[in-house]
Length: 101
Image 1: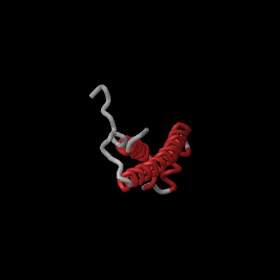
Image 2 (image 1 turned 90 degrees about the horizontal axis):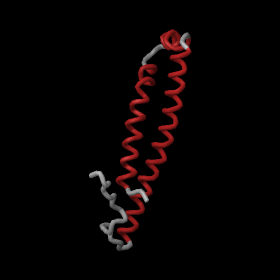
Image 3 (image 1 turned 180 degrees about the vertical axis):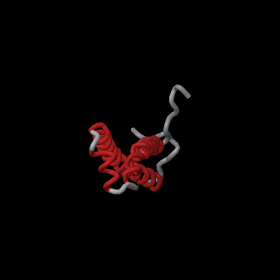
């Protein structure tokens, strides 16, 4: 079972991948259409790289949204446990250290 901390860790990883992948898209955002056409349309290699970047960005955005929903659910779960008098320190909501640490 994932803890809030482990879900947030996954969210941070997705955010970093998304940020890195969007660099190409930010460059395009500042181009005019003529600049875009000159840069990408005449090069199969560049247009393919752009297509891959768009696909990755869409996939990462979907993953990010799912993780945000998971974070919300974990917070509600912890809040409900606290309201019912459950001990939040019993280990259910705590991420255990990895053996390598």
